[in-house]
Length: 352
Image (cartoon, rainbow, N blue to C red):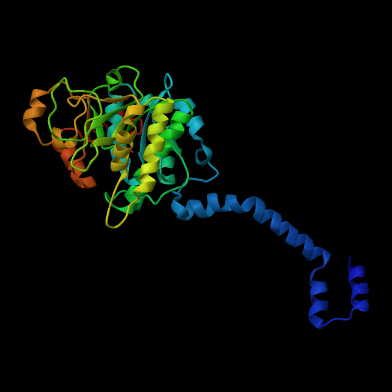
């Protein structure tokens, strides 16, 4: 190659820079450059994941977690095949700030012997890493990754972005052929809810209204309220993998796109869920779960008389109608429902 360069130089005399460039690009230099390209191409991602990612946790990657880890590439289908029992799975969706509530919820499920059916959909690498480190295979991440800190403030755009992914996550599970029970993690199980999923309906849900219903109330979708829609809670849902249940989720996604978050309308996913239910109620077999078993927090925590009258009938308690992590924890403690204080050893995640 050097002789070829010399002949070209004689035929086309050039400047000193050209001659220097030709000399610089000799065989040894070319080999060195090619070697560097190979090293960067092969080892670059590993260096980031094992070195920079380990040391600084850039882009939400926690210390000790590698983007080359099997959990970073763990698919929803793999997770469901491991976790589901009899074609059904219990799902929650968490970001890192919600991990203490996840642990509390899991303890209550463990007390009902249903923890093996639980799949945690992690919205960040920190949650994915932590759960699978303590409970291998029970957490999966469905990209893209959200900003965990922005997601926990109720009414924020981050919270909307977080909750708006719920129907698409659930739809993916149905399309893989599984029935799914979804819970928010600010819930506590006092009994097993599975026996309450009577019949073979498409979608089961709970009313979020505080008005007291008779014990033998209708299981149909309640009529619209003052805002022109029902007030069904999107935080406790059971769906079977039917075309009609999938239609509900697709309509929910469509309603979220029609009514996105804005500074003037600080929405969340629940209004869109109710609009979807109301618009396709005649096409889907819907079932309203009993209020006494699945009360809203605005009823359970604020009406002592009702709680006393329905004692022994409560199944899942939802700590809603209150905003703020500390306030929710205090309320749970006041009612003896912050189980991590005395029962952390019963959680699959231990003390977390």
